[in-house]
Amino acid sequence: MVCLVAGCGASSSRQAAPTSSGDATAITATLTAVFVHPEASQCSTSMTGQYVSQFFSADAARSGTSVARECRLHQRERAQLAQGYRLVSVHDLRVSGHRARAIVRGANGYPIDVSLVKGPSGWLLDASGTPVRAPGHGQQVAPQGALYAYRIPRGFVAAGTAVGPVTTTGAAFSTGVSLPGSRPGDGVAIAQSAANSHVADLAALRSVLPRIDRELRAAPIARAIGRGVAREVGGRPAVSWSLAGIKAATAPTDGQATFVFSSASNVVVVNCRWPHAGAGRAALRKGCDAVLATLAVG
Image 1 (cartoon, one colour):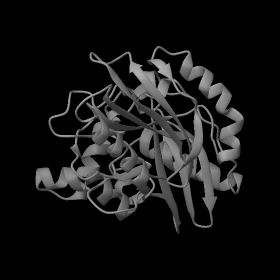
Image 2 (tube, helix red, strand yellow):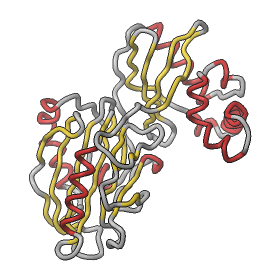
Image 3 (tube, one colour):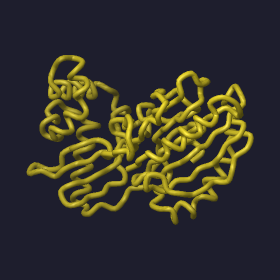
Image 4 (cartoon, one colour):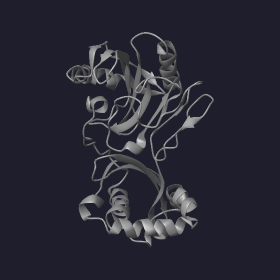
């Protein structure tokens, strides 16, 4: 778990039991075909229109062409990659009637949540990511394909991935907010990463919290780390630590680290940073609380 704060490679996850071995085999075959053995024809035979639109609408808008053409181009370009870069593994497969969800993990180890629908010809990719809507009002941040969403607090602005020492595999799933004019590094950074186990609820979290706490304290993160507090954030089990004297900062900096465990084998990490004293400290702490209050995790 300390990798989620200090930064390291993603680890493996466990595969959940599917409804039937036949469905599992068919779903795995679809995902393997699309990601490992890509062909242009799969844009119509292995994907729904919703999936194609979700993934390729931005490319189509930039190029002035159709989402179907961009999908075919993408599959052809992926086919040119070395096989080692195309390999994927399938985890946490769950089937409910004619719908299914799974985690697809690529060569870099980063997990992507996908959903599938069963049609007359078999299982089709239907969407990526869990549709998540943050509670409250204000601008929502919800990266495409990510498992989390939140609202930008009043007075804050989006800050990309530069806020806080967050290093994960898959930077597209890292976002942040900061106060205009604040020191570089001060603010709130949110990142989604892999976990080495699935934490279903608060009871499960409390059973593994001593191990997670030991791992965090063994890392050179901060001069002082408070007691890990188990709670719920966005309806999911979470644990928070207060931090004093963050070692990655160039000026005296305190903050808070929070792990929120998703319904899949992923963790959303919220790293908050504020000055040890002086201007901006109270506002940044309030902004951290606001992000956590609106954070929704699938």
